[in-house]
Image 1 (spheres, rainbow over the protein chains, first blue to last red):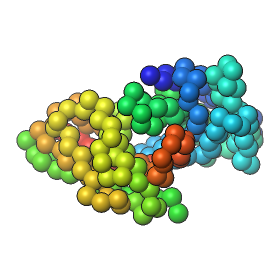
Image 2: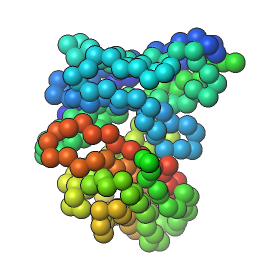
Image 3: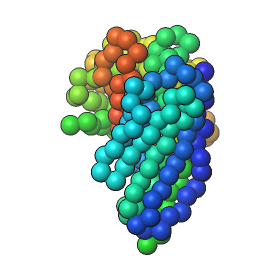
Length: 115
Length: 116
């Protein structure tokens, strides 16, 4: 099955600086890679996603890059703000053994923005 | 509008109780999911329903019983739970798919379950 590794587990960044979170995946058949932000006491919120036929996607201060050959993808947040503080999860979507789609999550990164 | 609504937000139950968690979406999504999330851990898949039929059961103990009454509703029936089952239970949904399409999965805010 798919295995997703995520680094770092914690990240502290000065307000206004950039933050980068990296993930690797194992299943070369995975074709969809979402990123979720989870604030304390809330459910995961999709912030950006990328499909395997695209190398980079940007949405305002957030960007995701995908390297299919190396099987890794990264989240980039620029001009960080205090409200960016949260836990971020990467994920990869693959087929389960029974042919169903399955989303496998990374272990999460706790991002803290220092004012 | 991408909204998955879960009730109740908080539930405390004894080990002999029977309770249910409820989930609703009106986005026309035909795949619905239950995930379990422990503190400081990523969500773990429990069940997947596709077109109201159970398609994935990730070897979940029988004290958790899912039900999909119609395309908009998903329930999780709880009976004889253990304290270690205390967690955040997340419902999610995604668009229908016939092929491996990588459709986006949207999560609800979750139901906090405490078993005493």
